[in-house]
Amino acid sequence: MISARPKRIDPQPPRQGAGRDLDEPPAGPSWSGTLLALLGLAITALFMSGYKPETLARSAAYGVAASLATTFIADFRRGGLRNLVRADVLAIFGLYFLTLFEFLFPHSSVNVLTNVTAMHRAIIACLWGMGGLLVGRHIIAGGHQRLSTLLKRPVPHGWMILIFVVCLLLGHLHMLLAVDFNVIEMLDACMGPRFTQPWGRGRFGDWKALLTELSMLLYIVPPIAGVAFARRRSFSTAQLAMVVLGFSLVMFVGFTSGTRNLFIAYLLTFLIGYAFALPRERRAELIAITTGTALTALIATVLMLEFRSVGLKEWLGGTRLPHAITDDRMHVDMNLVVIGQLVTTFPARHPYLGLEVPYLAIIRPIPRAIWAGKPEGMTVSLEATAGAEEAWTVASSFIGESYMAGGMIAVVLTGLFFGFACNWWSRLASPENSEFGILIFATGFFAAAISMRSLFVFTTALLPTIAAIFGTWLLVKRVTSGLLRSKRPRPMAPPRGGPQKPVRRLRG
Image (cartoon, rainbow, N blue to C red; front, side):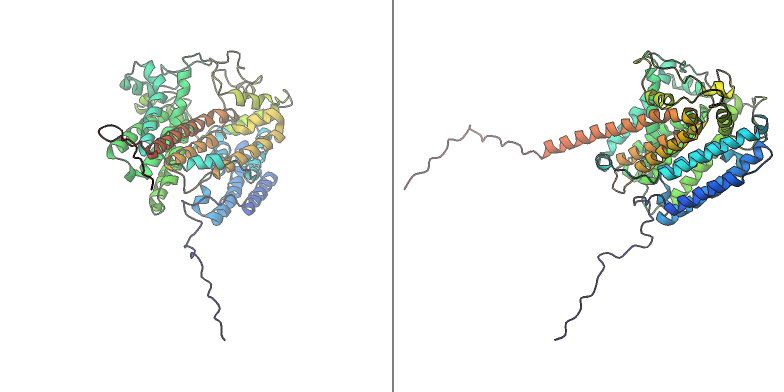
């Protein structure tokens, strides 16, 4: 007797390009790419050279760029384009942009602001922080179950438009109150010089200043716009027109403010919402939108620095400041200069601040109107250390602030924390996320990007995400309770003529 061996049949043949689609969860960072990047950072630290701060920084900028390129290529090979849309990738690129990117171009003005020794020590601190980010993103921890379940719960589209309108109105409420709800006057004031608008608040706010904090809700507007544009067939023409007008207003106000990190954060959250909501077959559209967003961010980085001191209206009329930067092709924030001054000051002139730095970051979201005795700032400010005037504000990224807390060890630990937090958030991505889930996920990218500029804004940047999570939870609870009520059997109405008498059964 001959028995035939059953033929093995695969339950589902693999699709071409499987694991490389935008609607699949990310594969995560590649250890091989991370090790190559760390090796590149070490080589950069050993072999960077230059007789001027400018040439030294340019040498480091090219070395770090090549090192990061290796890990991005490895991540792409592991999971495709979708694997690069992660919060940790954004944080790494953001830190590089804030510290070294501008030195890829001629930057002669830095030679009069610092010296080679300070620049070298600042670059070393940046390399330690970058290494912490790279390693920290491989730390895995759970705790996603409840949040990931919430992100997958569907909510009607009408609620998303309602939240869009509410955030738009509340976010601009303090501006509208300052101009008696005259929208034309508000737009005209937006085009004035920086910090001259009638809705500007002082250093310490009162109860009225709480209205200014509602402007954080505007960070929810761009990702909603991204989701609506990507899935425009699911929304009516009137809803899309409302989204276009509201999103244009937010981008206009952000651009005229001259605050580049604000405007770029709007662009990033819009792009993240758009990318995760876009159907897989429209990749050409995604590439076009991504390219346009990147070009807009680069152009805005240059233009906003030129007109923010005189205002967009006067700048368009030809007004220029005599001290405006014209020699440098690209100017970001000169963070390396400030970091160099910090690493030469701590602990030589001032002791490390220790836990004072994370403590101030944690309590920052608490309004002063609620806590009158809230600390006013660090005992040694960045401005005082950098030699800036009291009216100026300087930035040093989280590298400089964490160095003030505990030197290079604190820089590495902070980098590890941010790398871990960004990777934890990136793992919430899922093709099953609803539109509201995509909205929540996109707002988390804002916190990842803005925290690279300053450690102190991390907890504040989380507020829009927390508000989106809480709001979605309330909506899901309302929708679920409504469905349960609709499925509950209704009691039968009594027949006409009153209730029927029970019929007795006869025995036998």
